[in-house]
Every structure is written in structure tokens, then in C-alpha cells.
Length: 72
Image (tube, rainbow, N blue to C red; front, side, top):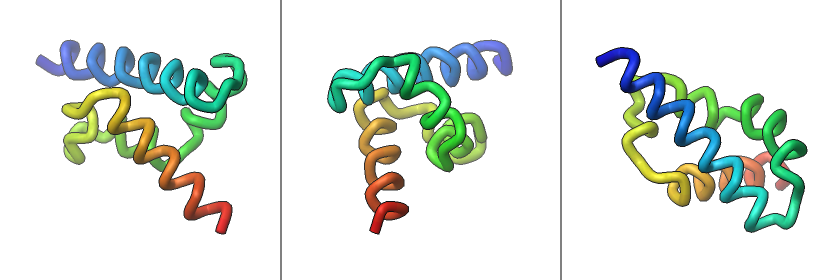
């Protein structure tokens, strides 16, 4: 089961990065580092939070909210 959860987390991270890139118009390669260093990614990879049970749009929204809070 652990391997399946890890696979889901990795897949969701990839899908979320693509979603963020599409929304922002940025190159996905530019988004990778920023997303993977974010608190949202840390929460995504913590199986206890359950964030990995949500879709990429939801995770992208969480990331965008995090960025907006840090920018203000």
C-alpha cells in the first residue's frame, strides 16, 4: 500500500505542476523547483495530511493561496 501512496503523491505532484504552469503560462520546468520547495508540496508528501487524496486542481489552489499569503 505504501508504494501505491507514494506513486499517487508523485503523480499528483506532476499533474499539479502542469496545472500551475498552464494557469500561469510558465514553463513547467520553472515551476518544478518552486512547487517542490513549497509548504504545499511538503504537505502533499506527508501521507498523514491526506492532501494526496485530492486532485491536482485542489492542490494547485492550495499552492496559489500559499504563494499569495507569502507575497502579502
